[in-house]
Length: 352
Image (cartoon, rainbow, N blue to C red; front, top):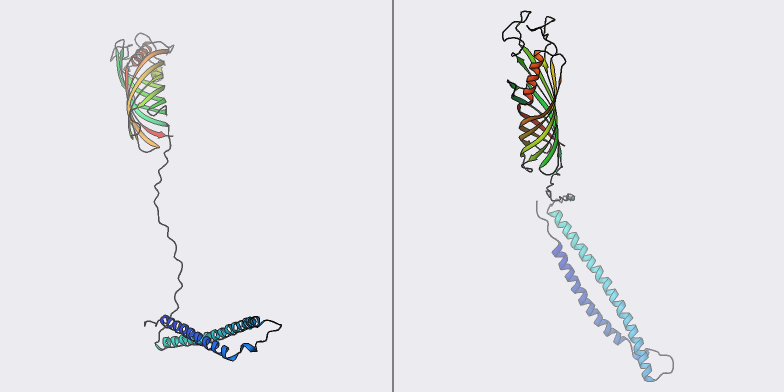
């Protein structure tokens, strides 16, 4: 496209020119007006009423003449201003008309400017780092599984058993930053085949022709205890600890069968009839644990621990059916109560 001619310099020149013309004509016309006023009037033609002194009359005539001249000058100035405004308007109109004609002659196509839409104000993005709110979780539940090894002896009987199942749950709460108090409930069970019954010689046959002395013993123990746990570290996710506590244990020891074969009670050579032999024990024990807890996040974690347990006080309830296998169970029960029990367990930590 061709560039449009700028009419602003033309307008500025016209305004300066018109102002100078108006000023020049104003001064010229004012001089003519004064000359004509002086030559056209005589002071004696101004009539003053009343009897006044010559000087007072002269002063009165002069005042009237001044007032008359003032009115004439003001009227003449307004006439000149009107004429000059008309002249200036005509000149401006001619200048605008010539400018439009020049635009048409140059074949300049004027397109309507696109409306300027208000631009949206983009606020600067200020990244505000929000610190996560740390929720205090002072308690935790730990379900766990594991195993126990039971080794001991009593009255010449040596035992070396391993539990086939150990399950339990611990509930702990924080006492201070590194000390926790907790309670534990667990259940352990095992089975073993006893081939050392005392009522027959090893390898002999019972009256029904079956091999005597091979009966399966069942062991079940419920444990309820309390403990105090000391955490060596607090802020770290890896928390080794030591724990000590006391437990109350309820143990049942019996044979899985009644000693009958094909519905016929088994007897030994001394005439003792095998029946429902069992021993129920209640005793108190103490334990020490070493472990480590790994916090995955603020809600979950895991732990692994080993423990050592020693029994102290016991009380037994015996089955009234008394025979050689009953004595065997009692001896095994005493050996288990005086044994050293080591255990290992792994658990899931749930914090709340």
